[in-house]
Length: 415
Image (cartoon, rainbow, N blue to C red; front, side, top):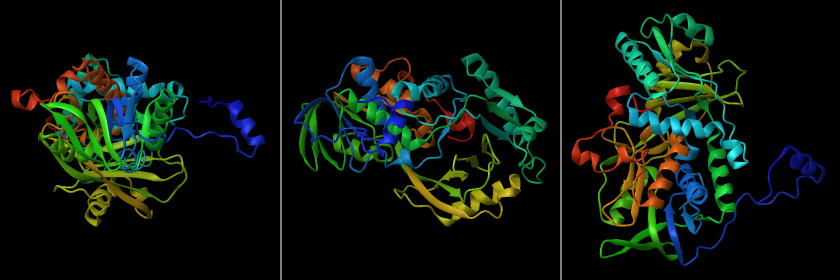
């Protein structure tokens, strides 16, 4: 694989950009692999990359029923943060945030990481106390955050109305090294680097069955034939329950649609990420000038990837009070992603009842920000056969043992 560089761009410019090679290979699946990963989203590709880089396991296939990064990886609002209350959550999200810092250099691919800062507004007294608690917890965890006063909030975001009648801003939890990245580029970068190390990325191939013998994984059935494997990693986000059913076990998750939208492009007016949990809306501005707006998950189980009118109304009517400037903007597009929710709103990473089969799911609405940490932890789990320190708290057995990592209660929102 040729390295990308300023020199390479200049050279290709002189050749009308006719000499660029394909970013990753598109091979035909072999009959057998050491590891098969189902799902070529950010988490699956990161798992493949860290299996190859950290453990030298390159006889790996990543099988995707659609196109690479076409699921939740391409349907999120790109927010990256690690200011979680529970120690276990803070550890894996901070690992991810730290890896994001140098990911462009590590992958030799510009993921457009922008540590512009993430601001989580406190708009009730209860929320203000909760964020102060989180700030103290973050200090103990080594995650750098601090509380802002309303005056400091207004100074960072001049377009914000902090004295709203229903939703006044009483303060904010600020993480300066949080921010955003280009969601597609994260998937493309991991795919390119993993492919260069020998990983096969098989697109447009659906897994239709999981083969086992005496409780041990032996391979998968696909729309293009059978593929044998010694280990299987299921990393398919909202469709995790369907794959688990094929493998013969059930997961404590439910799948719902999470919706978002972008406005028409405007001149730069917002250079941080703002999250308003009380009204369940969050917003940032893309490099193209669009305001990226996210809201809550649907209140009912579904597998739709389309938006709905009630979420436009619920999300925007509250944000307009805090950001009056957006009231006349036109919506450019809207979409939904299928997220899988656990009861404690924390992920599942680890072994399954089927020997040799591992699963990574349940990230809910926090999937994009966790991609590097998730891939790192999952690769270690698959390579060693047991979860490492990052993944250990998130095993499926915690629901039977009552060892919840309860972020829904801690944060009041899973974003």
